[in-house]
Length: 482
Image (cartoon, rainbow, N blue to C red; front, side):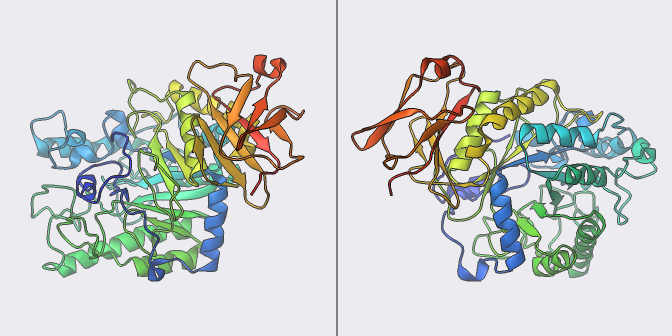
């Protein structure tokens, strides 16, 4: 939904504000450290955040009734004249009614939360972020505050033992040892307190001035607070509250052209959420400050290490939501993206959207299994690592273990490159005298020698012929010159 973006000038932020993504205004030009008053100080949150940074690889699941039509999630309801908001209808009112009626036919009888969790674990993922509610307002959990939900009696799936889909997902992934993240959209286009039927809905924003109609806005604030409290109090241990829809935000010097100030009182919401879930990581996406514990560049990888915790969220295919004709990134591409992100200190949150029946596209399943095969050999160079300058040299990325002098050099292979070269040159540093170099997946140390300010790794023919993995090869260097 968005082309690959690198860091841009400040004026680009206004352009980003018009992009749909899954609700983000990216921090593409905001590389500065947080101001002191914006930094999180809760020791439980900081501990959870440090544990999250060790995980590196997460699973984002965008899913809702819209999967029946294979259309972009929620955005066809939005009145903005953008490519991602187009709809196959000449009558907006009729379209909205038909869209809302999708809940009456949504019946994902092949939904298998345990199978999903097993597949994600096989891929080497360590945390999950599941869509409890997208901008369209449809709840994939058993909210008591609206009947626009998966457990509505009008939804044929409401009699299924896994009808409370979010609960089933969280329970299944929790059993497999995952940290649990709840995606929740702050804007709600189904709520009369956000899109008031009295006024037209020209864009993604609240369609009335909250300052002029404070009573109505207060009801929306109470509604949002109540729905979030349902999730953090009734769905077991939650580690991450992943809030989308960054245009719902208080006034600030970074309003990026927001038409109305849409303050939902995040301090109050955060205090409540952490009473129920001590140490909860809160990700109020794009609303820089104390309640954005880590940042989420979307559909792109920053070109350098960032001075704050971050996570690239990216769709495996072109779209976030399921399309049967979608085009998927190759396993090679996905592994390279993961390595690139980790070498710069970030996490990779990879999205795969299920179809209307609750199944993933075979191409997506194949990619996850392929990543898993690679991770089983090379994960030591990924998990619990931190970035180390210069991060990347040509097609070789670097990571280091937190508490040791160990450095990993990860050679990124071309798509059709099946074997590593017999000699690999690294110019950025040298091992200590007596250090050993290993290729992950092989027990015997490799020969190496100094070469100017760098060094050469020599691979025997047996490893060149049978490297043990594809797509990228990781070399462990036990000690590096400071």
